[in-house]
Amino acid sequence: MIESGQSGEDSTLTTGQEWLVDASGCTPERLKDRAALAGLFEELIVLLELKVVGQPQWHVFPEPGGVTGLALLSESHLTIHTFPEHGFAALNLYSCRVRPRPDFEALVARHLGARGCEVRELPRGVKA
Image (cartoon, rainbow, N blue to C red; front, side, top):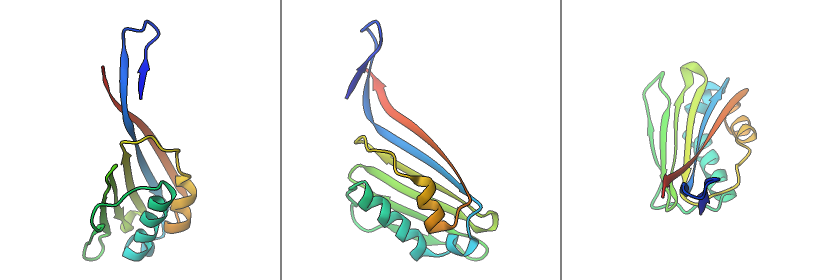
């Protein structure tokens, strides 16, 4: 997708969007639970019709640590890093194809017990 500036001189080639999701007030046990995190990934993958390359990778840290997860996508990537000791999860989703914004607030509330959620959306692209 190419978007032009008002003068017609500047244009940006849109290469997708990236969402940075900060989930706070999460249930610490869910932030340590690989299955709960995999459920969040699966719902996002199905909802946005994403294509996973290979298998998602998970690393579970020793107590009191959390979990790091990565799903390589044909569209780019989906990641999470959790901090159970702080009730916090950092989720990142980049898709090179523009997608509608998921209801991240409801998703992290349901899967992680989050009481707060801040979502930043970054359009990605290059000046043409």
